[in-house]
Image (cartoon, rainbow over all chains, first blue to last red; front, side, top):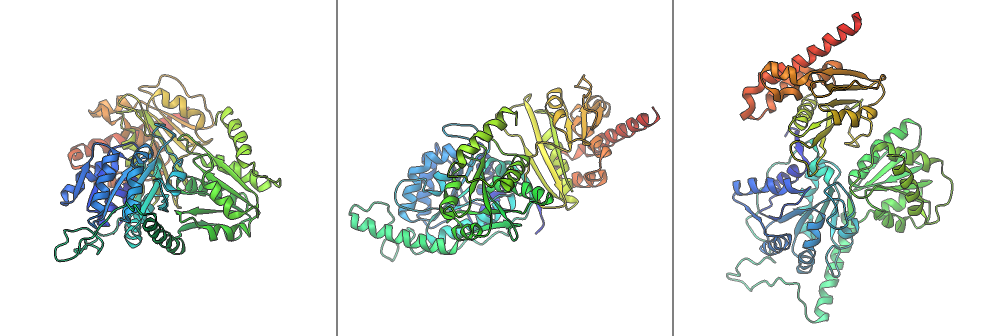
Length: 374
Length: 187
């Protein structure tokens, strides 16, 4: 296979098709619309199911029903659309059927805007739907990673009978980059044993998220938790740049991580010993790796396109071993590398205690920067 | 080496396509490349711009505050990006639509009557390609020949009949820059 120039949303969609997705149900919303648009053309071409539903609520329930047949199914949307899907997402988690959901995140809260954001970090990693479950969340940072991780997402969803969320921001959905698509996979003929397929010659399978007796529900909760603990053990994924001799560690995911990589490279050229840690699985969170890093660096800088959400997960792991500082842009603003470079320089020479005031300190700097026209 | 280029104009002037032409050529030349549009609720007549980054190494940020080169197809684009071009960088203005002089003296500035040249070729929609030809004459980030080869490979079939026109537009843009440089030298 050779590299092609591919747009994020379309590469995502084609990769899902090649991973064997047999049903796509969605509702258009910027900046994820090209995903659905591409599916609307390609899925019928291949004799697979495509439905543009009347709303996100309908779409996620179609995904839910179709997933119960044991086929690979998915949807893609953007922040407000994902909120509308929340109830269905929880039902899917409770029914233990594999589903892949792509969220091309945009500025919020509320209707917000259509610009790139990472403001759904909490919503995605801490559940999304109600109830007692843990979702897998993957955050690719390039078109190639979008392709690679949507393929993996289907495998993980099936292996653990779990929801897999893929989160990117509008930048990755809209961007074109050279990337390589995998070959088309064969669709398995046999449905998994738990699937509802007509029950000819066997006892019926029952798929539900209703367990009226709390004792029964707790059995399900225990099963979900055991599965999650397995996931935590096996499915942590991340990338590291220049961390070997680093005294400062920058931590950022998705676009923020990739913008930070430009800043890290520039700072290295200035002689600053800085490296980058980019979590790819936001859930399970790379706890051990970040704990390890916090034992060998002087200071940590978390960079996000939100008000400091992953920051809280990082701090929980670092446990005050070293100061953790923060820099973020919100509302759909993507930081430029020069902003993060300024921050790396500042953090490198800062010896003061942060004393849990990293957000307050960052806000002061951010407001000064905005007042200065940047 | 990382080269960042912003192509900016009105929607309908082909700014996004012009950027894609560069991006395909960069892929053809086995470089790392990113192409990212400004996307918004804009329609024809609104602003449309894209950022193209070409590099020998893996690309971090697909966006830049201070581009190396700016192709401004209209006045609002020149107003916005003239202050932001890197010192020593390139600023190419479509003088068919821009009636003011550049203020920066530390950049390589060129005025290209792109619409006029495009009309001479017979298709006013070729302004974007005239500007691309001009840019590559100032700095062959990707050699014009490679751009032509890649355009030949990637142009949608329904537009294939315009291929030679596109080539001519790029060549005319390049020639205009070369003539401007000669005039500057002899002046």
